[in-house]
Amino acid sequence: MQRDKPPAVQRTRTVRPIPTVLLACLIPLLSGCIGDRKSHFADPNTTKFRLSLTPLPDDPDARVLSLTGGPDSFWRELHAAKQPNARVAELTLRLVDPATGEPSPHKILGVRRLERRRLLFVPSFPLSRETGYHAEFFGRWPNGSGESSIRMTKGVSFNLGRKAPRPSIVAIHPSASHLPANQLKFYLRFSSPMKQGDVFKHLNLLDETTGTEVPEPFRKLELWSPDGKRFTLWIHPGRQKTGVNLNEEIGPVLRAGHRYSLIVSGNWESAEGVPLGREIRKRFRSTAAIHTRIDVSTWTLKTPSAGTRAPIRIRFPAPLDWALLQERLKVIGPTGKTIEGIVTTSSGETNWTFTPKPNWTAGEYQLEIDTVLEDLAGNNLRQPFEVDLAEPRGDIADVQRIPFSVR
Figure 1: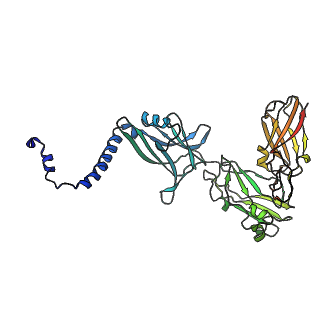
Figure 2 (figure 1 turned 120 degrees about the vertical axis):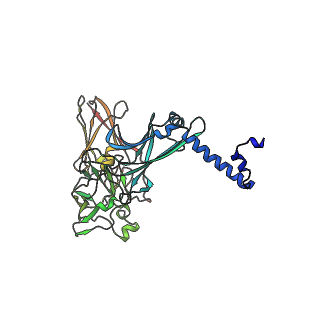
């Protein structure tokens, strides 16, 4: 029987035997490698995955990383996980360093979204066109005879075939020319999504009364709206609040009676790499600090007539926070439901108007005010920004209401 065996088998018997312990370690490793390779190439559809940057249906200028193609078994496994499962599919995007051509070690932040036969990676911030990105996909799924897996990378970028528009500053709030010395923040509104990260190199505060730049005036925290078009710029609260270390050691950022300029550099680029092109200055005079909470009894209301879409108008004695005015005042109708409409502000955020979508109907209404609504110094309806804990305060509801009639 030994003579009938192939020569190759006979030669293996002449090789010096492998120690039993070493053989026991090698067998699982070899079988695992051979098994993976076999199962991977047993499924030819693994080569049919496609990675690309594609537009969003609701924003043709925006781009998301898209994975398509591949076998049905992969998509069945991914949908069976009820969500974009990292064990089944990992989809990442990194910025490519233009100097070295190498991908950044840091992944771009975003969320994954699973559609029927498409896996999307939606970046948290807009991608720049004509900028290089490094996309990577790793997938793992059953193929009937084992498990298939694939790892693929691709350089991706996009060009819309037209020149990107130059961004501009739509508005800076507060829009008033006189602001309290304990002012806390500005809102910068842009026409296009802006480039984020290290934005404070584009921002300065000049004391025009002394001709000197105010040192370290801002809290270096980047707060952006989801669309990347609104930036909240905080004046450092630790310097604006009396009695705390920074205020005592460095001094307040603003001094009553001084003239200032908030300067925005023209070098600040949009997310698509186009600079503002010119310097923008918001000039204002600093007035006495405000340390009292908001009192709604000082507001003046002008009510509309039934059968019209004329706005309800409110006049405040002093400017209030622009962003909070968009969100923290609601009109409640006679049925107890919130009325939908459009909010606008004017006269340095001392006027608030609300225009309803439907016509007003006769009845009793309420203006509902969230007590977190603030003035420019951070004082709200519940308490002043600088709270005296020793001072007794009565309980104040989370919401205050002002009734009014439409006739």
